[in-house]
Image (cartoon, rainbow, N blue to C red):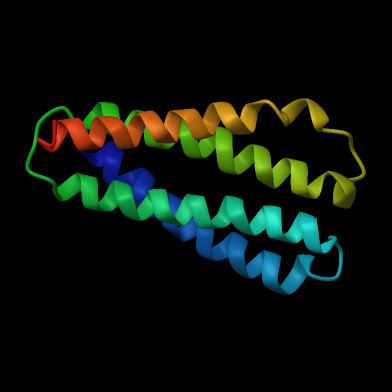
Length: 122
């Protein structure tokens, strides 16, 4: 189960770091819309980091599949939002990342459905 705990801790830690970075360093460099998008990525990373930590202590088998969907979902969803939000800051075009965000969101949804099923609510 170390995989689950590791990503739970890493995601919550990075959400605090990136949240502070956004609030203090990016506020003057990004538009309000870009900053709000960046904060959505941070928020979803925190939610799913905490969800992974809760998952780690849940008393059911096959948690790894829920964790895999959460981890890949966060990597695709949150990180695509981070890069899209920061493209004007770095002065690079990353519009091609736009379709990645909903794929990540779909992974997160599937993870929650698996969580529900594996926890015995089916």
